[in-house]
Length: 221
Image (cartoon, rainbow, N blue to C red; front, side, top):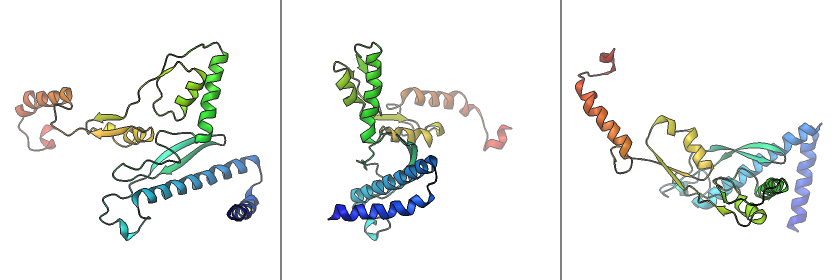
């Protein structure tokens, strides 16, 4: 009975939306926007379940985890590219199931896509693939195993450590997050974690900065 009810709701919604569809392009735009809304709503619902309370709920106070900023993510599929806002939690423990970390294609399309690529390689004469690096390529391991079963799938990178340089913020950080790689900032003055950089800083301090006497940047002019 619920499926009949859902069907009726969908038909009513389709009739309303179809009023603005006048061309193939209009239909494609509508499909992308509908997919975006559906995926974002589902992901936010998953985050609600993970945190144990809905958005803006007082139950979240003192819970130890909360919603964080959204990050942009581009999904690819038969209807083209769709940019969604991916929800995140402050502790970084949220593992979405609908669109997994590192996934850039919808699950039902990912396998089909990689199978077509690998089959084309086989048709062009490739007899085997020995090693494949699959970082961030959702559904690729299963696809390559079915076409080239002797392939050794290379281990994936789980964590990248960097110093706190500005080049490792923003886009770099979110790119790693989108492909499922943790990004950890190394604490300053931790030579056992980042010996080469720390030694360089120490040398600069001893051989240059201590030889200068200035109170602020103005004195350097």
